[in-house]
Image 1 (cartoon, rainbow, N blue to C red):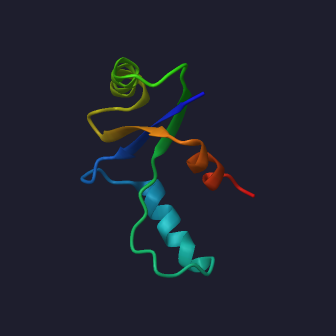
Image 2: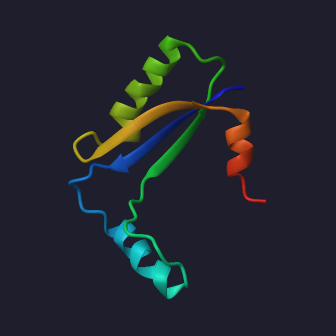
Image 3: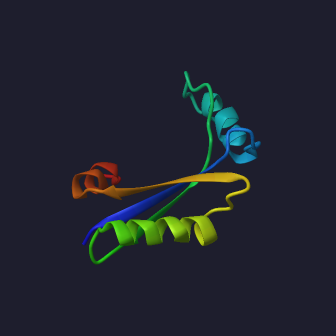
Length: 90
């Protein structure tokens, strides 16, 4: 079944203390070269089929429930099976 992904991120002008905490911890853990970290949320919605109507409905879900449009932006996309497998921890 298809998976529709909603990625929610703080707007650029909004402070992100969790992202800053991760950014500060990375060098202490031996990871160099990261100049900024922003932390967000990811929602995976398994749907019967992907249609324009379904994507519009998911966008409405994101706007009304999954994000706070005052301080967050969101994107809606369809994820392929290969993307899901590639992102899994081995």
